[in-house]
Length: 474
Image (cartoon, rainbow, N blue to C red; front, side):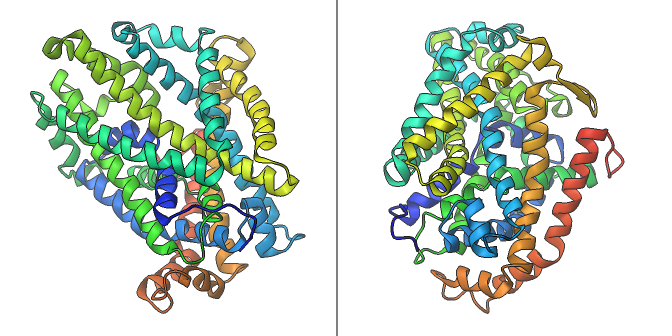
């Protein structure tokens, strides 16, 4: 263990920080809608099985690499494979991915903060106006909100692991849970709310097909921050005495629980104010749901609790989503921050300054690609049509590269680092792991079917996104 490397002060701090990275915007809105449209309880069951039997072993492998090397993803691959090994390419991708994901995630977080501010100013009726979202994202006020979000993220990261990331996670994650439970409790008291609950939890296996299964696995993989280098980086900040196996289980349970409970907030609210809702017509896009559809639902509350009450609920909702976005954004930016600090031997402050300039420029370009600048708005064309700069960043670095990074982790730990070293690392802090059923399953799954599944997801994503062709035929 590196003597100079800062570490989390407790196992709880690590779990909350890692859970914060996993709990994001998609958990709160995208997941409930996907579940409702694709079999309800059947989707939830399949999702849970995917998390337990496919995602968890990959998560444990990432954490084991990070803690053993006590370095960022690039440093971990180099340390474990050798400085001159070609595996450093996988490490480079594991750092480049979060760097680029931070760009588009920053854009969405800025929008959330803008809407949060507007609810505080009493402008809920404006947010519910059909044309408002397009006007908002193409207004220059968005850059003012961006400056505030950048300041918040940098202040947290400047505090380092204990005083920044861990302290923020210990406040933001419990606050997020409490707000979510309060909103769920309120929504379930509304008329016709149970109709939404039924659509959400009652299984409909007739909707299960290859495409839905692929979507469920992708959702589980992306939701848990796998392939982003985050878990590898955070695990480099934990003690050899900590139980990686138990921590990974807690992170997976926390992330899945938040996603499930969020469905008990979103779907009942939708069905309460629009009893004729057809779940199959709901948008799959979290952006569309958060910024276009849900403000109308929240405004409808004024009929029961008045405009001030509706604005208070809307403020609570956007604060909840903002907390989820900030915890994720902090963890994403931490990966390239740690890499710069380790590789260039520079201070955290200097590393963040460099990243703020680099990601800031790209974020501004992404922000301007929704209509402000024509060549950014229609930069290229592939797959289903014209693509903006924002679309390119999202399609390449979020939808496409993540399963490839996960595949690299599986192949590395099994065929370069070897099973014995993985088992030895996971046994530290978990003395009963070696020789257990879970150890045999982890080694078997990571060396056989999980890499095949991730390869299929990667190939199907490339075919679908860039050539408009699906391996599954629809």
